[in-house]
Structures are given as C-alpha cells and as structure tokens.
Amino acid sequence: MCQLRDAATATAMEHRKILDILRHGHADETVIVQGWIRTKRELKNFSFVEVNDGSALANLQVVIARELPDYPDLLKQLNTGASVEVKGTLVDSPAKGQRLELQAEEIHLYGGVDSETYPLQKKRHSFEFLRSIAHLRSRTNTLGAVFRVRNSAANAVHQFFQERGFLWIHTPILTSSDCEGAGELFSVTQFDLANVPKTEDQDVDYRQDFFGKPAYLTVSGQLEAEVMALALRDVYTFGPTFRAENSNTSRHLAEFWMIEPEMAFCDLNQDMDLAEDFLKFIVNAVLNTCPEDLEFFNKRIDSTVLSRADGIITSNFERLTYSEAIAKLQQANKAFEFPVEWGMDLQSEHERYLTEELIGKPVIVYDYPIGIKAFYMRANDDGNTVAAMDVLAPQIGEIIGGSQREERLDLLQQRLHASGLDEQDYWWYLDLRRYGTVPHAGFGLGFERLVQLITGMTNIRDVIPFPRSPMNIDF
Ligand code: ATP
Ligand code: MN
Image (cartoon, rainbow, N blue to C red; front, side):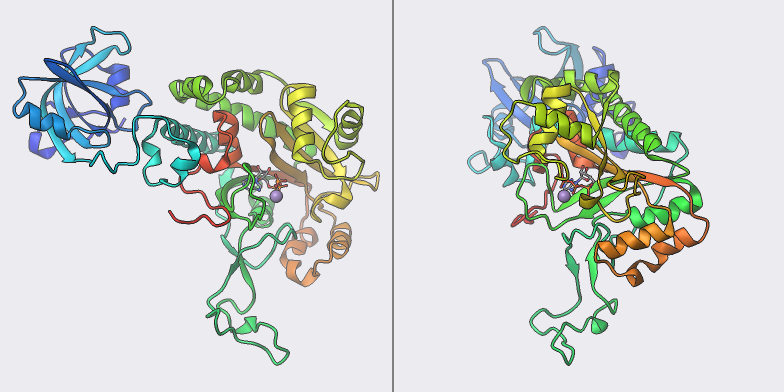
C-alpha cells in the first residue's frame, strides 16, 4: 500500500488510506486521514462525521468532541462533500457497525461545500440522474464500488495473460480498415467539414486528407493481433474500441474497452478452453480482492451477484453447437419476439433464455452458420458453418465472441469476395496466409460487459467512468 509522508510533519505520523486503517489499524494509533465527508450527525456533546477516501466501500467514523477549538464554526463547515484532513487517535468503537473510530484532534478543511447546491444529497439517487453528474458520481457508494471492481478486473486481465506467457501488444486506434465489415465506423478526418475537397466526379477527395485515404477509429484490434501472433505466438490486446452503434441498449457503448487474445497453433477447442479459464480467473480474482464491494452489489443491486460468481468459478460451461442451440430454442415453449430458425443470428432474448433459463450457467455456442459471421472465421468441412464461438453469460447474453481464423489462402480469398470486400485492402492480412501460415484462434471480450457480469449493474453506462453513447459526450 502506498503511504504518503508529509514532509512538514516528518514524525512517525502516517497518512493512511482508510482501507488500510479498517483492515490493519489498531486502537491507540495516531493517524492522519484525508477524504470527503459523506455524512454528519450532530449530538449534544460531540458529533460524528463519516469520511470516505475511495480506498474502501466503508467510511471511517470520526468523532469530533465539543472541546475542539472553534467547534461550532468548524461543524457548520463539515458538510456532505467537503474535503478534510483529520489527525487523531484510533479508538475501539463502542457502537456496533465499525471496529474502530477516529477521535479527532486536529481537523483541516481543504474545500467546503455549499449544501444548497451540492447535487449529491444523502438520499438515494437514480443512476440516470447520476449519469448527468458524471464528475461527481464516483463519490457514491455504488459507483465507487464499480470502479474498484473495474480496477481489480483490469489488473487480473494482465495477471492472467502474463502468467501464461502472453505478450501485451498495442494495436492502433486509427485504422484504414473496417475489420468486421460491419460498417459501424467513426470517421477520422482533418477536413474542414464545411469545405470538403472534391474530385472531378464530386466524390470526397481523400487523397487530400491526412492519411491520403479514409481513416476510422478501430472497431477491433484483431487483424493486427493476428500479425503479432504469427510472430510471437500468444498475444493479447487490452485497449479502447469504437463502434458507431446506433442501438441505444444497456449493453452497447460507442467507446468501450476490449480484450483480444490471439494464439498461433490454436484451434477452436483450445480457444473455448482459454475463454472459460479466463472468465473463471477474473471472477475469482475480483472476489478475492474486493469482497466488501461484491457483498454490497449482492445486497443492494442484484441478489444473484455472489451465486452467479460462484457458478462461473465452479461450473463447467455448457458447450452447444449452434444447431443444437437452435433445436433447443425451437423446443422451448416460449413466444420469442424473433422467431427461431436455422441461419438466423441469435438475439439477446435467445441468448438469455439459453444461459439463464435452460442451462442456468454460462454457455458456449459454437459452429455458427457461415452466412452470418465475419469473413475471417474458418470454414468447417460441412460447408455450412464456421469455427466461431460465443460465450453467453446470465444477465448479459453475449460476453465473448471468438473464432478460429481461416488460415488457408484460397478459402480466405473466396470469403473476402463473397463478403464484397476488396482483396487490395487486405493484402498484408493475406500475406500472413502466404508466408508460414498456421492454425490460429482468438476472441474478443467487452471489458464493460465483464464488469456488468461481476457487479450486476444493469446499464453498461454505469460501469465506465465517462460513457459515450448516442448524444452523450459531455464529460
Ligand atoms: P453484439 O451482438 O452484442 O453487438 P458483437 O457481435 O457486435 O456483439 P463482437 O464484434 O464479437 O460483438 O465483439 C466482441 C465483444 O465485444 C462482444 O462479445 C462484447 O462483449 C463486446 N462488445 C461489442 N460491441 C460492444 C459495444 N458496442 N459496447 C460494449 N461492448 C461491446
Ligand atoms: Mn455489435
């Protein structure tokens, strides 16, 4: 734990994080804490303020005795939201609710708060309202817990891959290719939009733009990750990804973080094994590092958080082919909004039926129809399907999408043409199949969906500090 020492008080006195005090502090220790006041309770001979510094869900209860200098004036200023430094002595707390409390000896107010205008009142606020004050919402219990869990999960992502010898690679954010061919791209240009250079045919003259051709924000680092995997064997990306999704859903952001492992000498089965190990590892790591936060989510947000986490860690994920999944959906006595037939893309309602109702744990669906999947997914021998897999999780639906990649040049070229893509644009990608091609596979996991899965937060906009979605980019 990082312990700051104040040069001005270069004694044995320590500035301590509240988490450290709650876990390791003991009575009679003198400490200095810094943080923001959550609540104030005035009693006759003394008052309580609860101080939170973000290091823990719990607050530190500070006791302010009437004997402190300027007590009435001081108390007036110790409002919810005010920032303080408190020096004092830890004592065993006589009341239940906390093990220790801090008997204040000196209080320094850094910044006061006008309670009339401070948007975070003691009452519960809706998540929708909190999104409109994204600069302050991380001071609430729920959002604070979300961002501690998010940090813990991000750390576990690196730990998982690093322990297995994967190299973290950095793929570009600016790109000229639409990896998926799905067309959900944000354009990047230096043109003055009021005065765009045109060719003789009145088309946009991209030759005059910064890169001399159209450029976009990346929708996936996969193609570049394949390049690196075919030199370094096992690699992963972990970075921001952009999709101009018009869908205003609780599972889509315009800017999100994606994790994309890519492995050479790897087939679809090994890919599915890795995806399952990965989810188990991350959930287990967060349970170990943020137990108080997960209990909070289980109590306040979604009472299935802990059982779901346990199910992910202890169960073997069910594996179904797409054709088996379709058959099960057709046998289900359910009126789906989108009728089920072989060849369709599974909708969220189908995914959630499979993982929540039918199986009751994560499900991996694999071998999807060739017609609905991207050109780079490896054709199976049956001629109808590709070696693709999606991991479906309760409450979320699709959390991981992956595949074995087509490593055979002629088949990849055919698929490119069938998808209406231009071979010229993919010359370097095709070169990987010309020079020392190998079976390889990987997947993409939306980091925010993972945080949703772990916390039970229903809206993806509440698991990233500054969400980007249609008409929303203020913070
Ligand atoms: P969906 O059908 O849910 O839109 P997708 O098929 O477009 O997902 P992929 O292209 O396979 O998703 O991307 C890999 C992973 O990235 C998904 O499994 C999901 O976890 C995540 N993901 C995709 N789009 C978004 C988004 N707009 N916001 C947040 N996460 C996303
Ligand atoms: Mn999508």
